[in-house]
Length: 213
Ligand code: PRP
Image 1 (cartoon, protein in one colour):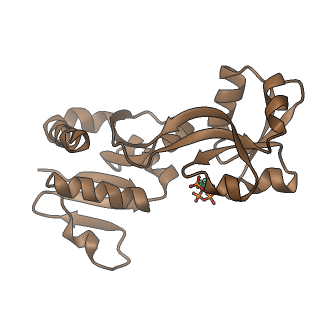
Image 2: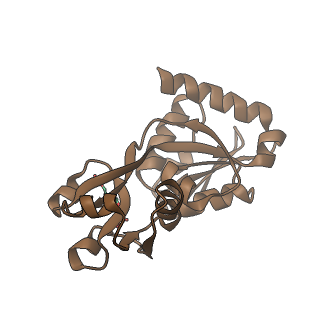
């Protein structure tokens, strides 16, 4: 039997994913030990797990370096990789929104001024503004703390994730438009889906049962 390899987005999503996988028997004791190892194995079940930066998870899965990945829908929409999205895991729920100072709401709706939009998600922002709204904007790519942009005058609005809303609130910003809901998803490499059909569908079916409980 070959190894089934999982790529998990580092952080809270990975912890939640391991809880879910453990509850359906896909365990990994080695992962619980404190170490600087990057890849963890369950020899008995022939499973391997590794943690990667969220934006790299779809890349590992598309190229087949991992058979299965767990990552946020935001990353899937942004990275546009060729994969099967097989399951909404239901956790890591948040929203992709356009946010900014309250007074930007009208300007955003009128579409008359050329607005600057700061974001970690240039593809999601351009899909939304150019294709869905058919509004011309200038998109400025940032790598984090995007809420700073309207405060310091880099951009008028941002496209970003809102979970609790406290980052926006504490910085005097508001949700101006909703783009889409987000949550963690399981993705599968296209070739692995054929080669390991039985093991992967068994995993999906077991996970579905736990999610729907
Ligand atoms: C995310 C997101 C928001 C914040 C939203 O940032 O980009 O800044 O969380 O969460 P809230 O609505 O619960 O306040 P992250 O913590 O990933 O950091 P980053 O902006 O530096 O990437």
